[in-house]
Length: 109
Image 1 (cartoon, rainbow, N blue to C red):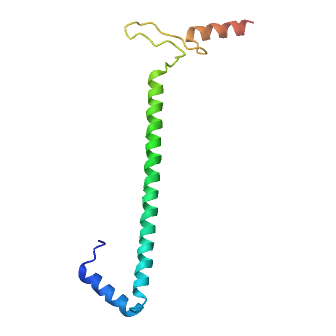
Image 2 (image 1 turned 90 degrees about the horizontal axis):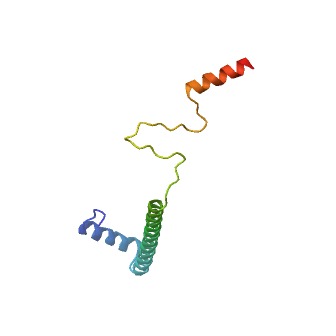
Image 3 (image 1 turned 90 degrees about the vertical axis):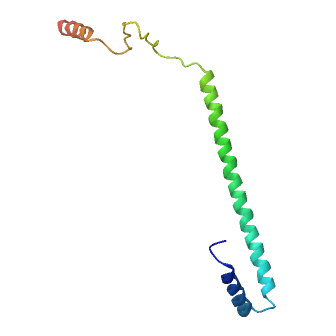
């Protein structure tokens, strides 16, 4: 139990008996017992709340994963076929040729 052997426990009890006295020792033992029981109860409640929170998080993650699997994602650009060599131009980007043509039109105006 805490690395204390039986001889150390006996010595502690004898010292407690001498310091507290035989009349108050049972009262002290009851108080310590109640305090330890309350501490254990609080620790168990805390552990239980942690486990409940953890299981809620796991359930939410599973639910989100299922939704992700069942929901189709709308891509802004169709995925490329790996066998085709065609390219898709993304909106807002211009090729170098279009950029040069636009520049010539601006300077001539």
